[in-house]
Length: 131
Image (cartoon, rainbow, N blue to C red):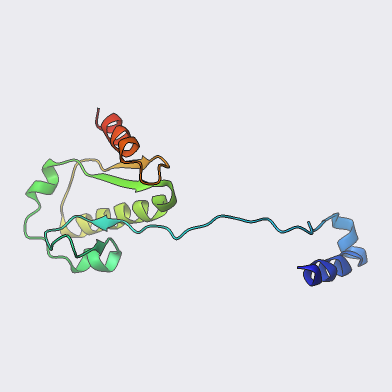
């Protein structure tokens, strides 16, 4: 880190860089990150098989009858880290429906609170959303 600070400070001593008044903090900041969860499909293949929603998978899955889909309201449940993936899956599903001439009721998005395994908090959020 010291070598980077020294190099950047050397750059800042140049005439053009001095005009910008940019400074480098010598102590690095630690950022917490994690891998985003992919949306998962509910299916009848068994509990040991996980299917994650992707455009390729949605295109490959056969649709035998869409009557049930047009009569129910779909709810995409996600946490704050996977909002983009859930929105992408919703958009992909809407595109697939359009290509097949299918319609469903409005799709709702439910963002779960940060609870790290607190199932009671999750249940309360779901109950509040449904009511």
